[in-house]
Image (spheres, rainbow, N blue to C red):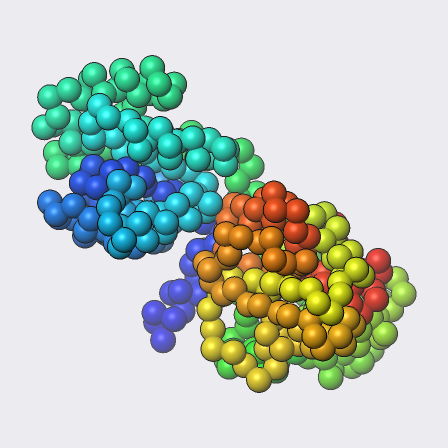
Length: 402
């Protein structure tokens, strides 16, 4: 129980600053993470390719605050298995808020390619030369790094501790402006406003706890000094009757949008947890535009449902059952619906007429935006669970999205 309570008091992983460490095999990436954190966070070995899959470590690091350090496989890995490792490293580029590029020699062939990828994403980069205590040409490497990439490389040694103290403040200077300052719901409700949360506790609600978007929304409302009242759908009438005045805002589960809309007071604003997360984690304007594609779907089309988490399908799963059912009721039973869970987002999106993404509470904002960019580049409309459901229910223009 103590561990569970501790976990509930932690900043969600998806809201933490994601710092990814890139470099060749045996460049000293894992030892560098251990030195930065002061812990044996990553396995260190002289054997090239020890880090097979990206390793995520959540930490509280001053002056950075809550962050996630990501140790990646060397991007010079070889062979069929090595290719798979490199591909998983490539996916980390899409989630990195800040990148650390570790240099080990004068050959920048791989580094050039990966720095180009990071710059295309707008990811700030910290250049580090590890093993400065044993590299005889560390200064020459640093000069070449600056000449080719315009980056001032830090010379450090994870073994001796030389220069390690410079890394955290250097990373702090690279944190994107405004990171972590965006609120979930305070654009709709402020101090003293009464907010009613309608939260069905059905088979999809984990026993004994609330789902993450609900918890995050409640915390954001409390931070904004709003007055929060919650109920299940069947108790909505009683909750409204208990209030002297209509609530400023009603936030509900998207699945019961139509039920809540029919009962909401005229003066009350209405939105859903999923719509709020769409704005918080992604590009809500793009999601609203993407929902328009529902009007033009044909029975011969293919739709992709993208889930952030991987879970055992439930009997009335929203992404795998309910949304596909609503879509087929609209366009026909022949509509093909595929599901991509976790990080298994397809590289080729051309077969799809529409992508419908979950609220992405398990992903950080940068990764969600990278998926949106990929969909836009492929010319495929993308929307979100809550926005899509509001569209299918005919109330998208009657709820708060921005």
